[in-house]
Image (cartoon, rainbow, N blue to C red; front, side, top):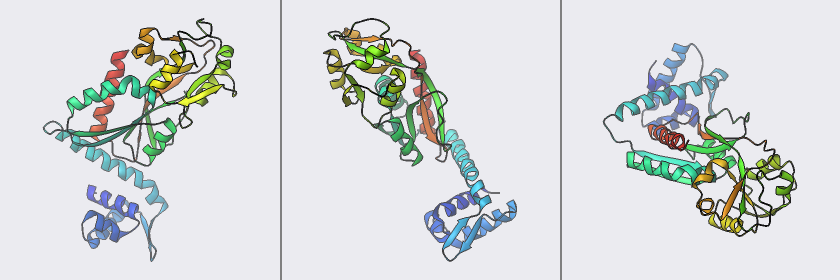
Length: 300
């Protein structure tokens, strides 16, 4: 068995056509047909059914396709790793991250990564977990940084690797009328005007579980923006942020915002990175994940 046979198999399955696969791979169609025939003989199975409408994978062909793709990915990763000893890593790396991870860890991670691998073109965006999952599945993003609850599972096509755990603390402005007791009772928090993330994020779902009610007094929905922190510091509303982000917050450092624990807090969150199992895990992506983990571990 040769790797080009697997490459032809994957491309024919993707294009559902021998001629289109040959065109994409810039080789003659008879060469692809002969390679697929040889692969079928070697495996003693039929991979495709052929008709005037094109080609379709057989049930065994569908079962073998992801394994063939994984083999090709591993071969490419092996070659890439070997080249990295003498060559600069190049290419494009697309990253999407939830706001809390973006604000706390991404700046230092991107700075370190760019110094180590200046020839990698980075494209970074902020989004909610649900959107990031869809973009990873569509292979529009190479690495996503998301949140989930313990026991929650992702689509089987997604690999999830945890980085850290945390929960929410409530942010109260220094001039807020809410009594500054620590921890703050959940019933008291639920009655206050709240600033939450916009609907495409998961925060409202998390808060309903945390506060034990669906009746949230949401004053305004924003991102993790300066405007949100300003409104909290002025006592207009209260907000919620992961406990691991508190130490880096300039509003907390200045005393304008006071982070308080939440009584009977049963909310536990996991934060980690995801990628599509069907997409090649490039060396650029693997190096990024490594730097991100180093930054998080260094913060303790």
